[in-house]
Length: 345
Image (tube, rainbow, N blue to C red):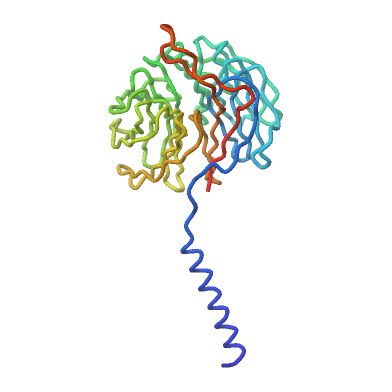
């Protein structure tokens, strides 16, 4: 065999070996890769990802902590957000909006500098979830204390109107085409809104799900994924309003996410589990894994590009003795232990 032939055969063997290794390689299981320590005191709620800039907005007590995910470090904060619940971003306006449950207001901030631009008082109580809709250029707050949604002109920072929802709203999603869906926790329903006409388009039961909280959307198959407190993830046809599947998840669910690339659905639960479900077809689903996280890690956000999941939690002390007013008291958070978990492969 001449040298050229030997060289060609050697190259072929190397290529074949690499192909076998690549094809045979299985991605590792999801696990907690690391923790980003933040500390301080106070509760927490939603996390919001600024994917292009790799920044994470973490609600915590009376402020929003901003993390640089390239370095896992705190790079700033948005202060004076009493009873903060959520953050939503309007990149084309260069602004962000924070829902403050304690004084029923929305803080508007500069997305680049994080400096506060203004504060919008709301004609409603306890704004919880908050969502920007790029189609209508409006911000929607979902007010747990008033069973309503407040609609804000995002550019002007002015309240347009208050929409009654007929129950306590939780998380909401938009499709970018003028449709918004929101869970109604105390009625175990889903409500659909027209974001321009500002009217209710539909109202559907989520049975067998009860007390829905987290919500995610697959805009291609028009499927909604509602994480419910009775340990069920309900899949709803967003056009027909019919339940097409119901799957088991952990206890204390508070968030859901959908990855359009992998077709995976995630439900984070306060019992320290993250349920992973695969969308086999629009109406067929299979449970893939239950990932151990940490107690209290019930809220999350998904970075689709890296397939990393970020969850907030802290350590907890023993619960106080039950009383007539508080028959099921929550265990207290240990000061200084607040952190963000990074889950990935």
